[in-house]
Length: 310
Image (cartoon, rainbow, N blue to C red; front, side, top):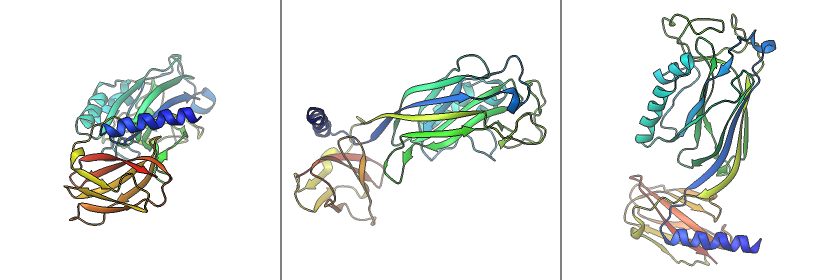
């Protein structure tokens, strides 16, 4: 145990000395298992299956779908035909704008109503902790299962959620008419909104779930993004055996975050002024050890420094 801890500390010191930003990342297994059956969801067609489970992890600056909202062209194509190319383009646009991290896609196995799709070892960074996923219930007019902006970061503990289980129910995308398992229907006019059709009149579904999404944390790490203004940060005293540390930066600070050797955020301070680039950080609640102090400027740039508390 001591050997493992020492190795972590050595690695941490090396990363910190190289100007590594202490951005926490997590690896998750994300699995959807269907319970789609004739008893609860109407007589199923012989070709009952799911389109690929697709989605994205992103920040709160973007929304790809939401209950009560109008489906984008990408979500419409997934819902009506299991086609993912336009939705992929919408995700890529968000990635290019800095609002999303990665496109996610996994096929179901077997090709049947009762089936499973598992995204394994998906790396999620703290900047993009929201998960959106969707898959077509096929064949159908425009029915899907989906999660929208599911937050994997626990804001109460400032750490990644270890396990999340979500029961999923059928949604209507509001783009094509029809109450049965058929893909040949007229477009909904006027266009509707995304709605929960579990137990809804006319639809084949009762109120039972159609499947379960299980998200399991595997491990957490620190990322390796390089600071843009590392040389402009001064922090003293360091090493430190007092109750506070003085931080000076050439730009106005917006946020100060402190991370331990496992990448867990242990302290977060929002600055209260728009004119000060000098801050006094209270560290009397920190145990002896090595930390990374990450600084975010008002202009959004990020830098970091190693802090030794002894």
